[in-house]
Image (cartoon, rainbow, N blue to C red; front, side, top):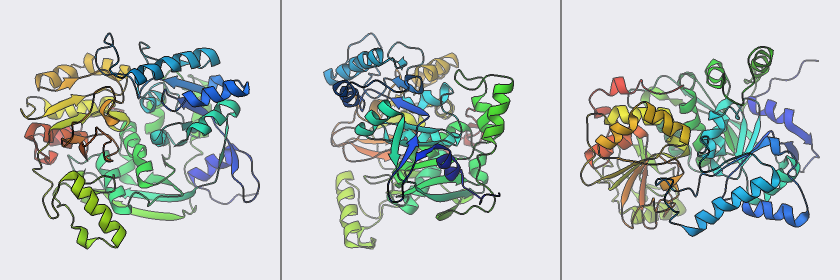
Length: 481
């Protein structure tokens, strides 16, 4: 009997439903549960109080990332609460038999960086973590999403989760990106177009010529910020680029029949011809410019040649008030150009743009140049492995020679941890994923942008267009698999 054409999301969902009753959430099997120190302590306490064990510790992997300092590892934590969280994760993982990549482990790093690095993230999986940006793993054709602390406890205890089936949203990106325009600009352009609630109730499936041309790490950047467009998750169908990235990684299927069988299964996952989506949008990649946010959510973004919008032009009273508040917080004037806006800090890192390809791009753009004297530039690798690889390639020397601060791996300024934060009133160009009020430090003002825009701005001392950097065509071709 021939089945109706299905989307990638529908195939993964159907493969993982344990039970479902009409009108009620489905019980969904979870293949991989990623754990970190911030959202897990209460969940482990709940297991103890109920006398429960972790159902499948072999399908659970933990790391310390949010609260770890990015200062040299021998120095003490500046934040006692952060130190207590990391210590408690060590205790919890030892007690419940969960593999842990803690401080000092060569695989320690941001959870959404080390999952792919280790080959834990694979096509067709369901993946959850107590972190909003779990959608990163969707770049591999996995259904991956963030969960709350009570849900973390449920997955630890049962390896299942109650979920309602999401709707599907096709995001097709046609054409080719111009030199100096990157994956970060694609996702910022999408969110600016549909708003921070545009994907509510849906899962994005990204496709089109521009998406297929991206490396895996660039695809991860796009999927990472799906949540910022309101979507539950974001996915990209697996292809030869995916398989090449995974081949030989520690937890990927081994060589020979195991690998061949995995490939054969993964090739059945892409959306069938004739399958329909609940919503669809098309973006012309060739028309995109570098993007930068001007407000206090990721949907408040404009092309770098654009101007800060006037609240008077907002569609309704609520939108007008929100924009007025954002511009007041950011101390920006309606109609002003975003180019040339002075900045104090530049941050390159996070689970969005802290991978080796991001650091290669940034170093190539920064080589032979110097950070403006009024700017502090921080470069924070996404994992210990990324840091080792960058240092083996001499990237850290390029950053240091240019006047940037080269740090240890961690979430760092993305969430203003352990002193890595803005002071009140400071402006930052940040490669992270959120520009909420106070996100990077109380009173701090954040412009989200790509690593290339961040470098151009660090050199200029103000928001700057990376397309104007000499040699950008050569730089834009540098990256990673």
